[in-house]
Length: 206
Image (cartoon, rainbow, N blue to C red):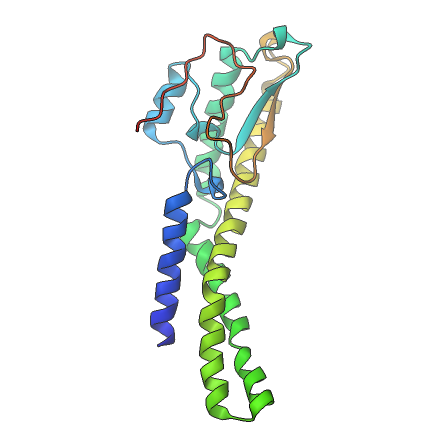
């Protein structure tokens, strides 16, 4: 009975992730740029997926307040590289969900001890242990997903910012352009307002 409930809870948690696993969701840390996004970047465009964990801003006192196309391309290339390197080293969605569900489920099983102390019934203790474990399972899985995504977004965004800092002072066109880390979710249209007007942004498919 417990095993079936645990499986159902994890499936529901996974479904929650699949429904929200994009840059606009609380799970943007799991986002990685697909091949199509790489092609957009190579062609000088702006990709939502390539910038899922970062925001790009421009100091208005430099370069006319505009992010140069070359700066945008380099930042996105670094972000894609960081996405791949970090994802290979940190826990993914499945492990994050499981890592949250197990301790929460164990904590919830403590309801059985409470029932035993309150009513002195072994039957009640077993019953409430099962109830508590299952009731805590899904919140634990979701908490694990959110925490794991936050950790991934932090690492991917910080990595991109670090890579950009390595070269940002090497070219006058990069002056005043900065990378900020986005820990959880972005707007539906996350195109930086300071982008040069020559930069193209693909229209999402309906």
